[in-house]
Length: 587
Image (cartoon, rainbow, N blue to C red; front, side):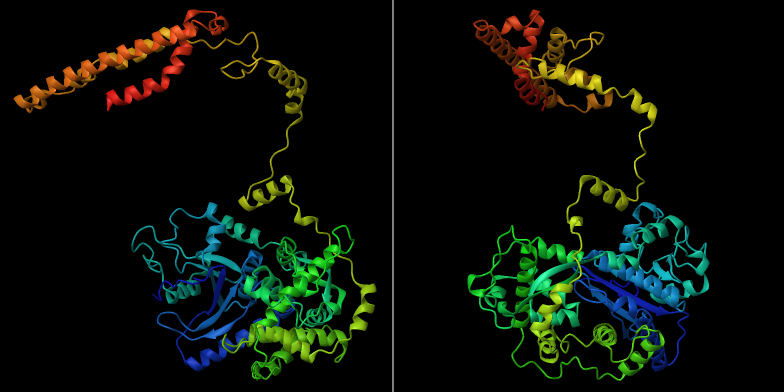
């Protein structure tokens, strides 16, 4: 089913594909080389933005994918974003910018929900567009969202296929008619609204907090800040088997703890903070009382230490030496040279501390996003942590001295969402404008004194067996109840012959169709129904008489001004009986 590709099938996963246009048939190897150079240029140009980004699960990555069937060779990427939906929308922004910077590329992006860009703009889509005919119609081209239209009638537009286009047809249409496939302004605005604020939004999505951590974890995170995500996820998704490794710590001993500053994404921080957890007494991780000023730092450090210990416990003591962080790929030299040309190092002196930090960040970025190995050969987070512990020299005493110069923590009030903030978020998600303020004239007509007096009158009102009644003005007409009319209505339903009205509807042909046996059966049925109705009315009169005798010995009649209102009470009590009887007769 290559013509209408079904993309991501894994939960919380987004897939993206970049195609060359015009896609002219040629030498496959030459096509491969062109796409590989595109990958190198893209990853180099966007390295300053992608390198320091902390991903929830998997990073943005690109690789060459050969053609298959009707789908030509292209650049492919897949990212599992997990619980952080912002990772997905950041990728949408990146893909959109790639097509803007590289006009020869056209992009497709989908997740396990399908065309999630159309879902975001659902309120503004054309009526003809639905999930059944949207395959291979939505693309990014030159930084704009495009939707290939469908012809209103077959054959009216020669360049539009009547069925959903194949990838090759779609690329041809985009190449020859780019101005006719641009999505409407409202649809583009809906998508742009969702990715508005990038790349500045990246910094706003981070949260810096102090953590009382083992020195080894502090050194690892200083060299590779992105590993905080793996640690948080290991703790957040822990199970009883994982916690066995945390009864007695072997890698990150509690005696080596120091105070340090850790940068999380807001999603990761919320996951870590909201988890309630009591460490095993044998672990050595004891927490101060909750009133302690550094209780939060101790708690965060304890949780993060458990996550890192779980990751390392899943590694073999002697994992393969072939899995190494050392850059051995022939692409690395060219990638590093491209970074220098794009001023990635910002003029830093080669060999300086800041230069080395950016170089290590570039190596990690290259390993994960540019030269990503197959899963069977990829290094697990635990193996990466153990490798860094063996290669990074760190001094606990020096790290303790740095405690006095830690940057301040970020305010965490964003964790508490007020009702007004929730309303604002819902309005932004729905694309609605803020509610219009109440005019001055409306405020003047709104008498708070009248509201207060009405509330007092309602509270002072004595309720009856019928419940509380809202106070009303003397000019308002009271609610009346005509008991005779009410009973006559039920008498008409129960006392009349239901078949009489139906018999008028029969024409002569219908009456002739009834033979003698039918006439006999009908007469027998009528006689039975009359006896049933008569018996029911006798039962009703008997019940009402019995109720009159019971109520005669009470004072409830004094609360009514007329006898008809007394009948009203009786009638309400018999409503359920009438309903059941009516259903029996009319069925």
